Length: 145
Image (cartoon, rainbow, N blue to C red; front, top):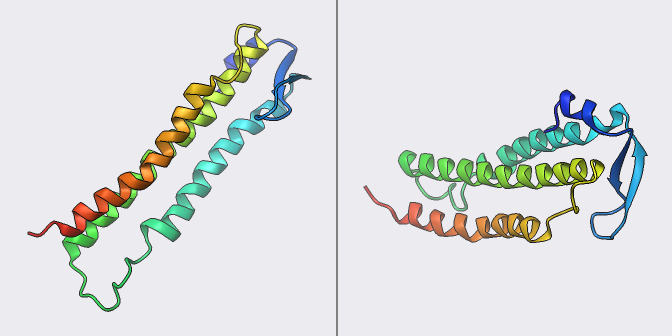
């Protein structure tokens, strides 16, 4: 995230995207509104954690009402879910950081914008987390002590 020191070094006009999908930048006056972006990042992070806990990490497994719960297996599944959420948050934050860094570099006139291969790689890793979770879940469910 951008620090107050870095913000002070930005020029009077800073870059802003009209759209992440279309070419072209807008030059806007530097203002404290620039900090809405990091605030949105923090709000997204907090909301993602709360929603993940409610609907994913804390959700009971299918069929758990009819199947006796093995506390050890339930603990391993919860750990796996927490791991998947943490990995997703890491890569989502890397996307936020890349977008913000790109804007700062563009504002200083030394950047070329979003590094599309890098951004696509981050999105690809996020998508790979889905089969990763399901494969790991299968191994946790098969594991017997």
